[in-house]
Amino acid sequence: MKKLLLTGVALSALLAMAGSANAAYVLGMKGPGAGNPFWAAVEAGAKAKAAELGVEVIVVAPPAESDVQAQITQIEDLIAQKVEGIALAPTDPNALAPVVDAAKAAGIPVVFVDTRGTNEGVTFIGTNNEVGAALAAKYLCDNLAAGSEVAILQGLISQSTGQARADGSKKGLTDCGLKVVAEQTAEWDRAKGLSVTENILAGNPNIKGIFGSNDNMALGASEAVKAAARTDITIVGFDANPDAAAAILAGDMAATIAQAPGNMGGFGIQALVDLKAGKTLEPWIDTGTVLVTKDNAADYK
Image (cartoon, rainbow, N blue to C red; front, side):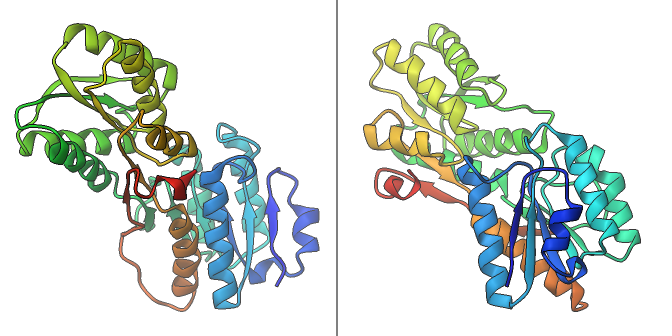
């Protein structure tokens, strides 16, 4: 069974090399797997499931996650090739909505992976970010005294992921009796995570815990905490990227939350095969989250 990794926009010749493109299922990622452990794992999960099911899979991605037009062009070309189905991680859900509608109109099943789209009736396969953030909050609750002051570094609240992680963490922290004294966005950015944490520490000298809604911000918070010579602050992130895993093993962070990118790819291909067979899907298929501490951080480096 032949499988192709596609990172550019020139699909036609490569699809021809794959044989009958309309016998293939497609995983459309937001970015290339090369150099990105997350997308590499999504790709590996899709390929493993395709091998298990005995179907062809073509993996495509724009050159960069910001290249929305490249992804639109890819999906348009795939629709023209009459592929069997498309599991899509949209770079921009609103911008990709018309081509998703075009695929559905052409009789091509579509599911969203990793990032929820805006099209009605299309199943989303990805992380329940609110549940994952609640898991992070539980770790802080289990490791801090009741009434301790904590802070939340938010992502972009305009995005569903940022809002869900902010909501899930705050509810979990307040429900267990911790006191949330600061909620500020650092826009998913490590440098901003550092500067925002510096400000939070200056205004809240009794703070004992920080939840970073992604690992970049949590790592920035760790830098600020180290610079302030504070050894009494517990930091938890989200994503379990290799840098965060290394920070946990070094003692600079306490924990993070791992998504299951392999499940996203694998469940995506399974869902397309099921739709092609006439089965119905739940609106949301949760791919799961795992707490990562020193006990298992080496698995994520």
